[in-house]
Length: 155
Image (cartoon, rainbow, N blue to C red):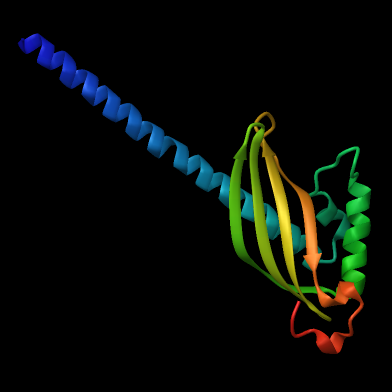
């Protein structure tokens, strides 16, 4: 009887220990990956602020459907219409785990010399390569819709 109680207590302790390791072990990696995704966003906007369009385009995922050169052209068009980047602020972030990795959707409020913008970046970190790259960049601004700079008070 005493031996059975000892086995049950050890099994229970093992179960509690494994559960705590699972809870504590999973969260720090998600937090660090989320912080790394925000770091990629900050470095992307730093390159954009420094007018390094080629450097900024290097943060994008290069695919057959969308080569890095097309991102360079989009960066060029946005900065021509909105002006130089003055500042950016991460407004929100959403993390989704998919079969092949982590996908981060980050909304950013930006101020360019001519217009404000609300931007959404979708980043992906694959399971096999652990590299976080930008998959999509959506810029919402009056300046891209052909409105005048006098209407720059809202995106």
